[in-house]
Image (cartoon, rainbow, N blue to C red):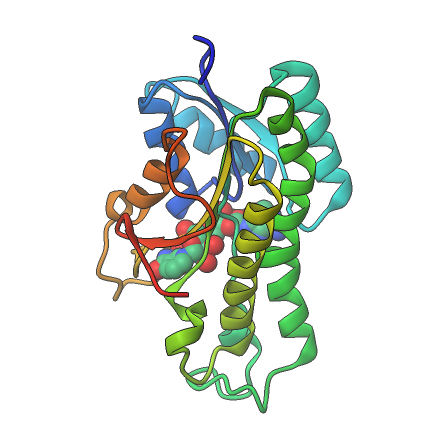
Length: 242
Ligand SMILES: NC(=O)c1ccc[n+]([C@@H]2O[C@H](COP(=O)([O-])OP(=O)(O)OC[C@H]3O[C@@H](n4cnc5c(N)ncnc54)[C@H](OP(=O)(O)O)[C@@H]3O)[C@@H](O)[C@H]2O)c1
């Protein structure tokens, strides 16, 4: 950072789960957090819960709705002037909901609509947010973009089943590489990460990790120094194979 102003972070899908924890810890790190969610009541309640942790403001955002992204961009440009950190956290796991056999969502049964839903939220949403906010980051030549990916999108070891989720997470990793390459002249570091298997609504009760462990690598990537890594995939702060 070249000045003493507080950094401003936008976190998507932050009314619950890992996004909520990321907001909490960024606020504790003296970062001005814009907590976003598609449901206004849930998001406002989440921001209210974090009011003792630091500066947390609420703004509505549905990552599949271009008008909603436009309103957030306008708010950032007019009210915040800058955007230093973007955590693309919002995500869905639609395979099991729509599969003919929920315990074995095979690619051979997967409806095209399920693939589209996963891509709309998990990939195109993140891309549109970057298109909107990286422009703002470029003006101050400072930015940290954290893309929430998953080991399930790790191409080297990819298994069968859950094709919509897996393809979407492999795709967000591709976006990380493409954006990082295009931003190499800027102090804007774009990275992907896997939080591990975390106890959230998505992770379920059998998950092995508590929220702070799941959020740890996101906080680290969101606050990287200028000479930090770019265009990489991480888990537990260590480089992870694509
Ligand atoms: N939990 C794990 O074990 C795990 C493992 C690997 C990767 N991840 C990734 O980590 C991220 C967070 O996961 P989580 O476990 O915290 O999931 P979660 O508890 O299910 O929370 C998902 C969040 O995304 C939001 N969301 C969904 N669609 C949205 C949209 N169109 N616009 C804005 N927000 C939207 C949800 O909002 P609503 O409340 O409105 O639905 C919710 O706030 C996801 O990208 C996920 O793929 C999680």
